[in-house]
Length: 237
Image (cartoon, rainbow, N blue to C red):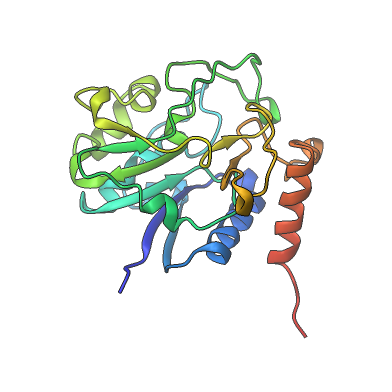
């Protein structure tokens, strides 16, 4: 019997709609049970796990809380972290099957150098090496013990997001980037749906259609997000 896949989703109150639609899309397509936990900052603060002041360069509420996942897993087993501004179009079990015990972390190794300086809602767009790598992570939690509560609360954002808590880049495995963590309006638009070989996990890193002034972000992909939202709210007779 397959145990539920532990999935942690970065949560920002401004993107509640995105979180809800992502969760529904994960459940709808998964072939095995899922255990999904949004990382809600006030809850983590109440548990004494998170105490950082908001950084001016921090564009979301979960910029740093994602690195608490190994601690929440008691540094045992594997877990998935993903940003909330995503939509799953296929079976997340296919990503779960890519786990490699030789690796501490696995991610899509984007080569993304942003040309813009501002993201959604006026948030600062900060360029740095390994940009977007930490937005989707398979975490081998027993090998991530450097991510203590104290470290996560005191290390610089760049040290966290550039994986300086590992001994080197040889501990970072590669997830197939053509299918997972497709950056909407950053990478070339997909020419096929997931069932025909297109990307399975879409990522609106520049802001998505749940924001009033970005309703067409991604073109046909924005329409797909609205369709997924409407499906998640469907009433049955």
